[in-house]
Image (cartoon, rainbow, N blue to C red; front, side, top):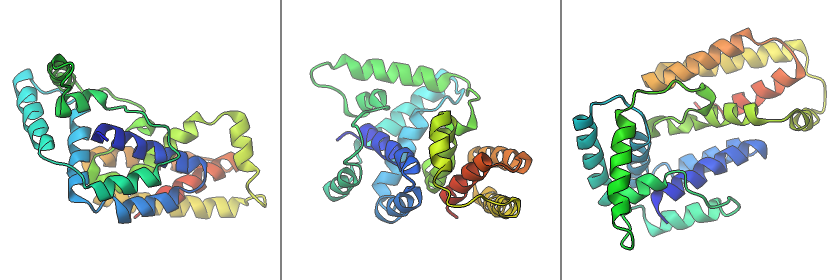
Length: 236
C-alpha cells in the first residue's frame, strides 16, 4: 500500500475512534505500536511537509520537493508494520487524500507523465502563501502527532448534527454539575498549558486558541460533553 493511503486511513481511524468513544485506546495503540517506527515517522513528516503551503519561492520549493521526494523513495515501512496497520484499520474505508504525493514518490509506469504533473502541482502548492484555516481542521507535523487528538476531536465536534449531539448527551448517566464542569475545565486548561510549553510554534498557536475558547466557555451539558472528549484526547 502506498504511504499516502496508509496516512489517510490512520487519520480516518482516529476520527472514527472519537465518535466511537475509543480515541484514548487507539491513541495508545498508535503511540506504542506505530509511532515508534522511524521510517513511519519520517515518511509522515515528508508527506505533511509536501502537503503544506509554505510561501517559498519557486526555486527553493523545487529543491525542497526534489530532496524530500528522493529521500522518501529510499524509505519503506516494514511489511510487519503495514500488516499491523491494516489489521488495526480494517473497518476503515480505503481512500487516499495524498494521491498526488504518492504519484510523485512512486510514479506510474502506465502513465509516466503523472509524476511530472504531480511534481509541478506540489511545487506550485508549496510556493503559495499559507492559508489561515480553522484550527479544528489543522493537521500537525509528525513530531507532535501524539496530539492529533486535539485536531480530530475539534473537527469531529464541529461536524456533529444536533441529533448526534443529543445522542452523545444521552450517554451521560447523570446531570453534570457546574462544579464538575469547572473542575474539568481547569484540568483541560492545565493539560493544554503543558502541551503549549513543549510544542513547536505551529501547534502552539492551535493550542493557545483552543485554550482561549475553553476559558470563555460557559457551563452547559453540551459544553461539558465537548470538554470531556477533548480532555480525554489530550495526551501528555
